[in-house]
Length: 375
Length: 255
Ligand SMILES: Nc1ncnc2c1ncn2[C@@H]1O[C@H](COP(=O)(O)OP(=O)(O)O)[C@@H](O)[C@H]1O
Ligand SMILES: [Mg+2]
Image 1 (cartoon, each protein chain N blue to C red):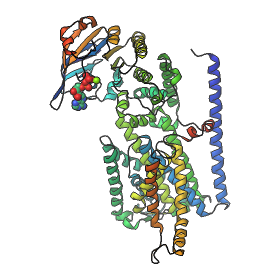
Image 2 (cartoon, chains in turn purple, orange):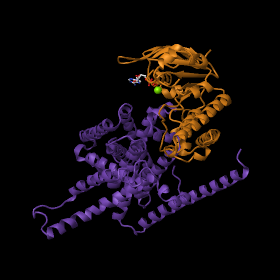
Image 3 (tube, rainbow over the protein chains, first blue to last red):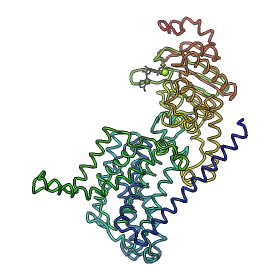
Image 4 (tube, each protein chain N blue to C red):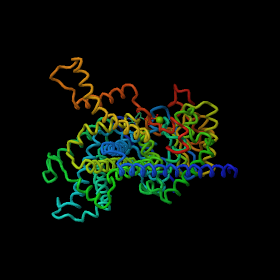
């Protein structure tokens, strides 16, 4: 038996901890509110807003990939395939609900848009999760290189299928999702998409955090670290893998649906192997199996890609000014695809475990523990 | 009815006969030893019983259920737990988490419970946590709850693995060379812990062990295998003076 006093103090400290965490949630809420108000009163312009939304989408995309590649230690290379599924399913449902496209007449009047948008997101998530199930099956028997090849193949297959279905735009892509956004704006003039992206990002992080701190979710780490021991200790490894793949791909689908509505236009080629590579870069940048690491990496990566937009033309001018480049060659945005894989290669070479390794921010800065709790 | 009933178990790996016509009955609250030279097929027996391999032929009944064809996690759920000859812990999870995961097969909540943090989730986690800490305390590991196993000395790693197996609340505990690599102080601790587990939980224990000190002080019956064949059965004293066994170990200075 433990002495009573220690019971008492431990319960006191746990109350204090939960109170602090509640304060933290409150701070998050205030920040989100402040953000939305700032946008509403035009303190933030559209450009910054788009970057913020892109950050949120990237966080969801990378954090969900981290579940499989980080926590479970598999090597999935086709994560953008699921984002593609989500983007198209979300767009089809959205267009079907609020415009005449796909189901003849529109199902619902536009005033319903703000209330039915969660349905759009949910549909995208669920259908993508089902696709994840299909990829989970080969993972029962293969790991590492073979699984990597299978997931790349899945990415290509999904894109080829979409490109070849004329009803959803084929290679021309699909547009009109802005109309759903406009419908929402007519009900209440706030930056709806920013609101949805913020909600979904917080939701995604919460789901992953809660999953990975539960005994149920730790089964994923167990499978990663010693599959034999996991199976022997009563973990149904096949079920764990299926669950992880489905959650991961479902969240990628959610990111896809948000992406489709932020831009109002999608094309299957937006979700090709290059997009999957972006996901890998973010995961390995942040540290495999580190939730806080991957969030930071996604934010940093989004900023980096945006900066390249300005840096590359500037470099181009600079190099031309000193005649370091042939006069008829200009350094264009394609070079982004030299720089990003280069980052990946350098990272693998010099810090293969990522910036945070499989540690959380709270390990690097222990004082944060008062506010957030990770493992 | 015995707790574990094995009849005519045979395992071939290609041309190699790793185990031939192996039979044993283990009763409730029994402590049985399995010995034999290296490569005799001892670990293979455990791998077959715990559902890792499918035997070429033979039958296994555990707690009245035929277990052939069941996946290992199902066998564990029936009440069998094991440790490994070479330690298999989750080295990047804390000791406490290692023990917590032993509750996996009787979690009693789903994915949605975990994500929504329902009352069912909280109750289940609370009870798993309490029980895990209890087991760590009982195995004299309480102070290492937040350590990572990879940072612990070898003897403690073995003990964590034993605690983890115990945390699944087994009816039968399979220990594969639990004393391998331990120094003599660790071995004494191990003997004490195994005896305590055996008396406290009144479960059955089946262990593979080379060290005569461990086997002699713990086991009631012994079984000797060599080249996959059972060459002797009896009490530790009988086995020690059995010429067939001595012959099998010739050259080994174990006995
Ligand atoms: N999965 C396997 N595939 C092929 N041969 C195996 C396998 N597992 C064990 N063996 C062989 O079976 C024999 C018995 O091995 P094992 O049961 O591990 O012996 P020990 O009695 O030392 O535990 C050895 O010759 C080993 O090489
Ligand atoms: Mg062995």
